[in-house]
Length: 198
Image: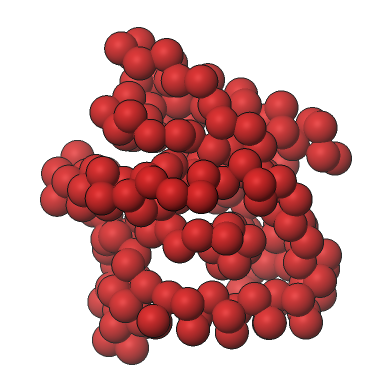
């Protein structure tokens, strides 16, 4: 209930301030677990991806965001998974695995942190590769654009800018390969999606 209400409100705000557009939502599986992988330019990306996706998805976010009571309560209500940065957070990994195995969506940013256009699509974290390897569920790429203008890295000031979210066809994951190679393959698919829609 909290997720659907939050999504409805955020979608209205995104349409009002960012004229958000979606493309390729037919590639999101109608049922069953799935992983949604996206580039990461801005703090707005989870909101853009979450409102664009027709199914509910859980995000993984740094645990320090849960230090603020009101924000923490909302994050928990919309199924955000806290992650300890700089360590192998087994609790977060177990929750992520359980989430997708239960038939729900899991959204990941393989780059691990916000990037600029100059540093995007390179050196993804192996965690996305690990989860894609361990979970036998569809992996769907997404490309977000415009958020780097609406809320650029290094600033807290919102700007009125058009935001677009494009979903692509399922990525074929070669399971059993090194996790960093799987993450690089995932990132290459997201980059191809970006090149096709720029």
